[in-house]
Image: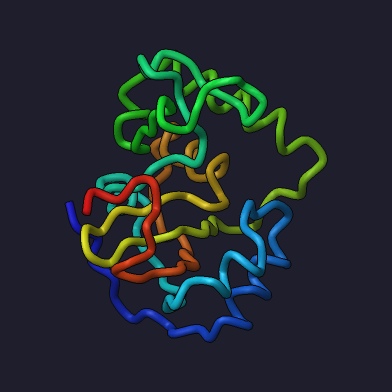
Amino acid sequence: MRLEVLDAELLDIEEFLETCRREVFVPITEEQVRAVPASFRRFVADSRALLDSRLYVASDMDPNRERWLTPNDDVPRSERRLITFAELMQAPRLLRDYLAMLADGRAGRPERESPHVMTLHCSTCDARWMLDGNHGFARLCAEGAHGPVTVTEMTDPRLGIRACAC
């Protein structure tokens, strides 16, 4: 389902990069951001609508989609699989393992006062890949505590994200 984005605030590249720097862990470099002619925006979306969209978690799964992989696992990128948050919510064991894995990875990181995520977005097929905010968003959805979520996004029709269906 296509996510309806209303009242988006357009950002320039410096504002987007400042958000990346402010976040505790964003797995993208300034060089990677500057290398793509993209647009940047911030908007508020209902978490339920985000969950129902083609929003992919940042972590990879094994080829059978039975366990989570880390960057240290010796599995080629071509064999790694993605999963949407909607699919993840239907797989209790994978959700439990994912939340535990993310909790370990964010040890010592501060909690956010309100839900905020960062995404990469293909504006052609409307796929999104969660750049930052996976733990908080997964917990919010697992608890069924849906509400407004601030989304900061890099978007373009040629972004070439792994979740893209183009």
